[in-house]
Image (cartoon, rainbow, N blue to C red; front, side, top):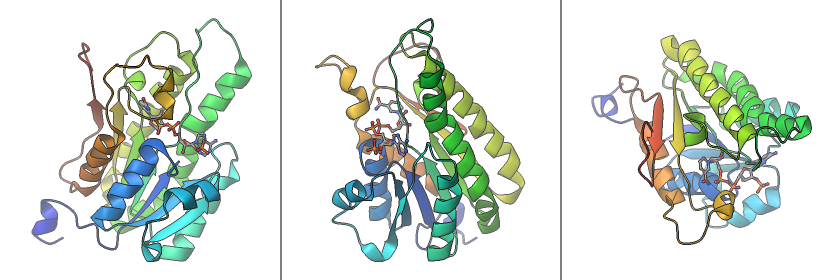
Length: 242
Ligand SMILES: NC(=O)c1ccc[n+]([C@@H]2O[C@H](COP(=O)([O-])OP(=O)(O)OC[C@H]3O[C@@H](n4cnc5c(N)ncnc54)[C@H](OP(=O)(O)O)[C@@H]3O)[C@@H](O)[C@H]2O)c1
């Protein structure tokens, strides 16, 4: 590692996978990392939506892949497609997610299964499939776009809270599993952010801009092995403990 890279890693040549890159926070991260100079493998369940969102991107550095969080084989397929194309994986950003609004006693196992599938099991599958490549590069990175709902309970979105708490455990698991081979994992935990997901929030309330989350993700990816950030809450409002 060069002296400069002891301060911040150089994006050039590094390959980053981002799920749910066609809109919201995922698209903001894709744009920022593209500007930084990374090579990107972008996953979405609708390639047409991805192509439309990424019309201005340099195709030389971008691979668009089908990724459906509810289809178990999709994770391994996307990882294989990325390695076939770029020959390496340096970072994985598990961003795709869903929110369902309901109380805990509004019992619906199908809904819980869907939320767990997208917010927990798909990131888990992608982590396991990508880990050998992240280990190989010596500075592998995993960012899980979690939520403040992974840090404390919010009434009215029980399945989401359950999935995000478990997603935090997945982040810690990846830190422990990969640490000796230079893999660093971070749970970025935003509060309400200006995307479709926050559409239920009353107008006029202050929200975090997705480009701000993207700027934070960019910094986290560039941190050297000697500066691991396990959990990073980002708040647009004052709240005790997070
Ligand atoms: N916005 C917030 O207030 C907020 C706060 C904290 C944390 N977060 C987290 O930030 C992440 C991104 O959320 P966002 O705000 O950008 O939400 P969003 O605008 O609703 O975008 C969600 C993304 O996830 C993708 N996705 C959903 N289900 C999928 C599936 N089955 N397979 C593949 N992709 C799927 C969507 O793809 P389609 O376009 O195909 O649906 C879309 O790209 C999520 O993990 C969310 O929990 C958001």
